[in-house]
Image 1 (tube, one colour):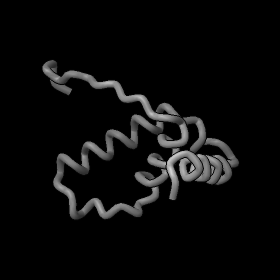
Image 2 (image 1 turned 90 degrees about the vertical axis):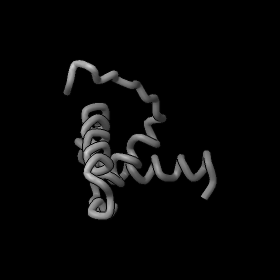
Image 3 (image 1 turned 45 degrees about the vertical axis):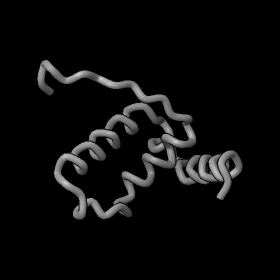
Image 4 (image 1 turned 135 degrees about the vertical axis):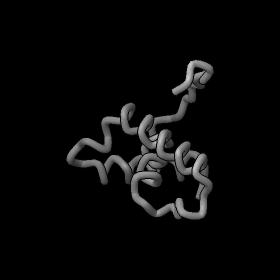
Length: 78
């Protein structure tokens, strides 16, 4: 990272972060259609989410993900 890079903070609900992490980590997104900077940005976002979330490291990750998904649907609709 260069000296002129300005960090940005982003605040996400845990449910949003977990669902977003799962989407990025799953390989379901077609990254080949994206530009190199877009792919790099998503890879860095995935890494940042991974360092902040304990959920992906737990044995009952799929259960945590299901609960987060249902919470998002309940909160924001289908």
